[in-house]
Amino acid sequence: MNDRQFEALHEAVRAEPVEFDGLHAAYDPDSGDEESAYRLATPDGEWADLSESEFRERAESNPWYVSNWYFWERHLDGRSPARRAFLRRLEAADHHTVEERYEALSGGAEAVGESDATGAEPAGMVTEWGQLRIVATLGADGTRLYHLRHHADADAPLTDLDVHTDPLDARRLTKFDDRGRYRPLKTAPSLPTGWAFTDLRAGDLLSAMDAIYPATVENWYREEAGDLDVTHWSETAERQTGIYGIIDELDREGVEWIAESCCVDSQCLKRREWQFAEGDELSADGGTGVFPCREPCSLVVAAARKWTTLEREEEREYTFHLTPSEKEQIEEIVDSVAEGEVDDIREADVYEGANRYRARFLRAKRMDDHGNLGGVPTEPDDHEEHHEDEHADHEDDEDDHDAGDDHGEDDHDAGDDHDEGDDAHETHDADASDDQ
Image 1 (cartoon, one colour):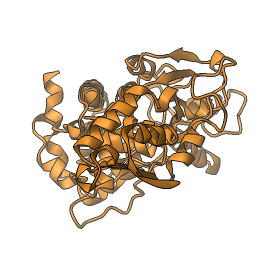
Image 2: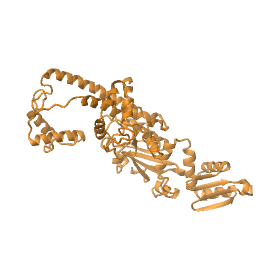
Image 3: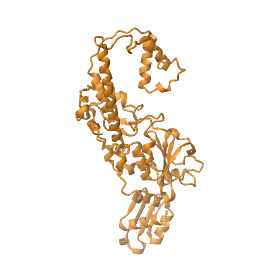
Image 4: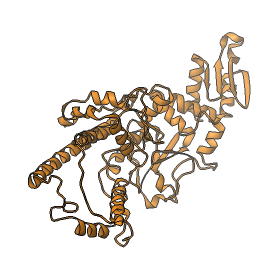
């Protein structure tokens, strides 16, 4: 506790009683002697009829309670309810006393929070948020300091990481994955490793998190408060215009396939709360993420346009001749691509169906010079014209993909510019992509 914190408490109790996290303080000149009208209480004791000097002595003997009150009620005054609630979550404030939290925040040691000169992660209270690891520590006079890194780097010394203190760096650091590929979906489980933010103040921590996982704090808070406004698939599809207006043609089974393809833990860290319609739940697993997904995101909307056009096609029967192993290999290739495992299969792993050499052998054996499986054209009556149409469709798909990326980037960056919870309402009117 410092002089500024005591003076703030003294001024506060002169106006009205203070009750916060086990600290009770009041000034009641009508109770008797105006010079001995102060009262202070904590879980450790209660002291009444105190003079101003005695009130200060008791405050100094309970410094954690005073500095804790000052941090939350003065230092963070004006912070949005969602962000305040999240910061309190980082130290489990609703489940532990001030003493327990201060001991944990300081790591049980005399040092209070400054990054260790040896490069080790400071001891404190740890929270995982998606792929983020957040360590809350205690700074001077009850100030909180926060340390942020990828959870996979939990045991890495700072000397092995790219260390930052400017929260605005977070956007650049997380734009590409560890393989250098652009991340259009910020909540995809592809957050790059190898970086750390140290000794962040509360506002800087929240700014960094806005850049990494926009709107997740606000949506988490809304859900905790029972106020999460969910927009289901049917409503989202019906409001689309322009080139995305066709997605309401997808039937319920098609939406099930979308949810199974895109909205699972392996593809997105959000927990899907939207369903096909109000009261009509999808059977696909919605994931287990800590922060909710309140409506189909822009990438799902953009992809749904392609799936809608594909689902317009009628099924046809083709005849191919494959060995049992070749059939299983094709199934393995599809599965490996779908699970993003192709890059993990080494050239020497020839027993893997999606091995590059195995796939090339299958292509050499079973595809003709036009890339037709078994030499069977997709359109037997008009082979060349079909290939030209297919090429044009592919170019259109690339345009759609680019538009979806741009649209998704705007959606998921929205939280950077807003401190309040309104950024949680991501705009998914997919025709907005056309304006960018």
